[in-house]
Length: 266
Ligand SMILES: [Zn+2]
Ligand SMILES: [Zn+2]
Image: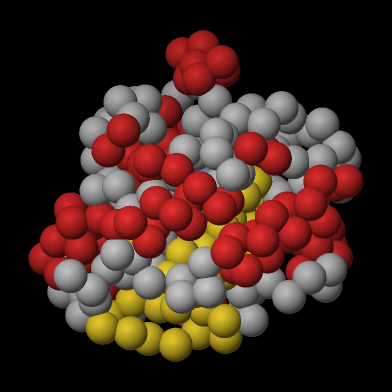
């Protein structure tokens, strides 16, 4: 089996993942993966913006841990990346981060739909009960579309994250998906098939089969990610993700080196 690269993996520096990068790399090698990428939650300009990302003073340590894994596993290609939160107004900070190291790619993710509410935070689940789901999904996709248009990212993370807790609007969300996908296609940004959704209440890969089919119709390329927060989650459910991609018409996926894309067969 020729596995796609796992481009979404975390480290303990974000304060809610377990296992050192060398342990993630060892697991990847045991599975037979040939390429992985670390994409831990990036610092915000303001340290301790929340409790689930690294502070800025950990960034050099992060890069060193990834480089240590590269030295320990010379036959495994290991990419250096970040999962960067997109909020409108953060663009200058994201450009500053981009200039600091030789990143291979940035995953742009929307978790926040306001300065203070990350929709996937289980501690903030009560917020969902106070909002109209369609309004939340609409703000989320508006920001996700802006993230795609910003050209700050190679990949957009878990594109239908608002489904995490299984809370769906009654309204038809297809126009929100299409507007985002048109922006992604124009900007040349990929989406990831993120298997972590299978481990959440929604029990479904991010994004949904309908969304992935629409993405293919719009010519938006893909990557694969486990969103591993522990070494044992590396490459998890990739068989299902590959089936999803192929059933939706995909024949290849992206790899990135120093922010340049190449296409490889799935
Ligand atoms: Zn996380
Ligand atoms: Zn995320």
